[in-house]
Image (cartoon, rainbow, N blue to C red; front, top):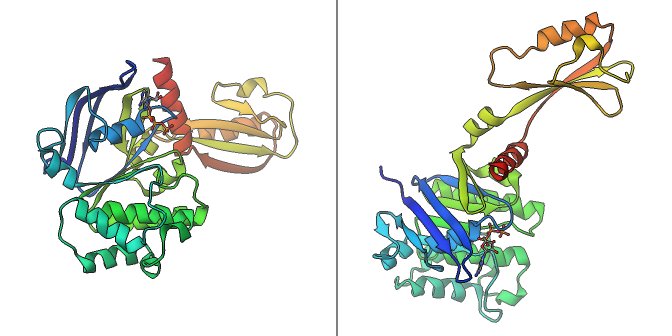
Length: 310
Ligand SMILES: Nc1ncnc2c1ncn2[C@@H]1O[C@H](COP(=O)(O)OP(=O)(O)OP(=O)(O)O)[C@@H](O)[C@H]1O
């Protein structure tokens, strides 16, 4: 099956000459969840705005469901739902009317059963007759999602959906995303919360300085880039690593109570057995050993840092 979203050599320069996108290539399959990570100013919002037709590309092509977003704008845009970063709702409007209105904007006939389903899915059905101004910040974010879903898009863009929401609501949002995926909706989200990408994405894209540094299956990325650490806790603190143990993979904790050994999860020989026997031979007594896996956050920091120094 061809990708539902196909971005080819997309470039965007702002009128002041700043090039915010420097040749982006991105293919997304139907039904997947892609998390776009990147530092502030990396170009995430510009990328989403350009794909959705809010900003015009300087060059390059974007197709959604095979429709070119410039030559066939209406058909392409009808397939897209966009949940913007900023809450831009009419305060005196009722929830249900604002959602119905959004559907109407796409020229779709009223569909009360569908709007009810969406509002129930987002736990907004009980609030359908409330004015927007009477909702909490988290509920307003849900209204933005309901509006974006009202015309039955196949691809949903969520630009930092959980910025500034509390932990509980963030988890609710993850469940909503999982439900949408079950309904076959393709989701592209930007986030600064790496744990969010780790929790919900199928693939991770990393963008920095207007370029995609990588797009990779989350599990494969973690396996490829992830390192493990073994912490060998000692019964007595030491002031320096014994000469027989010195290696660039081994360091001493700040308080001298543990040796920390890094190893590659991919390599066949981790060197742990040798390390433990060398530790014993050096006369050190173990209290405990603990392993730690590097997180997506460590992987992300390494990648962005590598991108900066390239
Ligand atoms: N209208 C504009 N005119 C000129 N430069 C702009 C404009 N909008 C964005 N930029 C610049 O383009 C770059 C990318 O901005 P963008 O908002 O896409 O980044 P982002 O990755 O979404 O950042 P954040 O994580 O902070 O939301 C930034 O350097 C920004 O200053």
